[in-house]
Every structure is written in structure tokens, then in C-alpha cells.
Image (cartoon, rainbow, N blue to C red):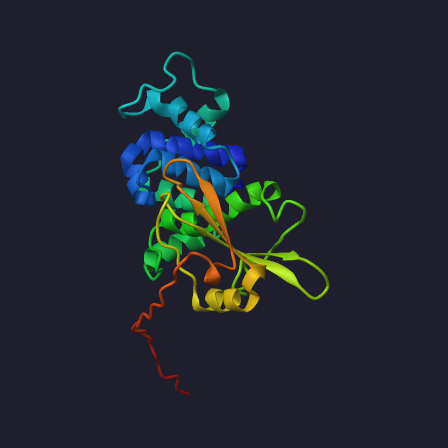
Length: 249
């Protein structure tokens, strides 16, 4: 399978949105282009303006309401991508974007196909996870109390927080990162995250990335359980379906 550079992934996103316009937004679960550029760029550690510029570069070649950069010829490295992928249909192209942007790779496609995710859309999964985490990794060195340390990524360990800052041999700070689309909205802690926050108290930080739909910014809550935030306990009963078979001789 071809390995794309960050620039090539950015060009593919620009081509996708130029060709499919608002249909492209809908199939990925975005409400607007600003949100899409913010979320996808953060997930790739690219610049939102780069994705927009690549979309504008392709606009003169597709039927959409924008004129794009129609007064100059397309750059050769963009033309190479357009020649190879410009004829791809929307579903296959969307799957390519999902697999190349998400850390989960091709598992993103499977998650959408089986439809068992609580957060069903690709866009929402990025906002509540990967894009928010990449934002945090980009800015944490400018944010107190994290600016004097190197943080350890624990997102794959299932320990109830996303990053830790080692204080000494026996203790560390824990950071849980969450994302919301607008400047206000609901944030949920899992049972494990809530219990860790209760255990760590002032050594637990809730880092909220907000407003992906316009311009992301963040808010930090130390000891969130005892902060001005009011958490409401919710219990959800689900029906789990399993399939069994008999293995004979």
C-alpha cells in the first residue's frame, strides 16, 4: 500500500473537498469546511490554511460554487495527485481519507461499516479523540503547568487518562484530553476516568479542546471533580448480542 507524506495527505483532502464539496462534508460527518479543516489538519499536524489552499487549487477543475485559483496553472505535484485520484468515487475516496488521517488506519472503515461505535461519525471520533490530543501535543509546552516537562502519552494503555507528567519516582500528574465541536457542550468521563480523577484529585487535569467549528481553544480544570464543573451520573443499559455455535467431532 502506498505511503503518503503529510503534504500528500493534505493534497488528497483538498482534492476530495473540491470534487465532492458539501457531499464530502456529509459523508465524513462534518458540519462545515472550517470544522473539517481544523479537525483534519490537527489530526495530521498540518495547518488548516494548507488544506483550504489545496481545495482552492483544485476548484477550477470541478463543479462547485467556488472559483478557486483560476488565474494560474495548477502546481505539478497537485496535478499528479489529481490525475491519479480525481476519478475516485465518493465512498472509496472517503474511505481513503479515513484510513490516512486516523491513527486507527483502515480500522476506521470497519468501525463505520459495523456501526457499533457510540460516537458514530468519523468527524466526531476525531474531535473527541485524535484531533483534541494532537492539539494538546502542539500547545502543552506553552501551557502552565505542563510547559516545564515532557509528557508521556498513555492513550493506548487504557489507564483512565491520556498523558502523564512524572513528578518524582513515586508520583505523577495525569491529564485527560477531551474535545467538543462548539465553544460549549457536554463532556463525558468514563467510569474509569471518573474514579482516577477522584483518586488523583489535584494531580488530575481535564484538558478540554473547544470550538473546532470555528477556531479551537482550550480550558483546563485541575481536580475537575471538585471544580465548578457539575458531573451528573448516568447509567445506560445496553443489550449485548452474541452468536454461538457448536463444534462437533
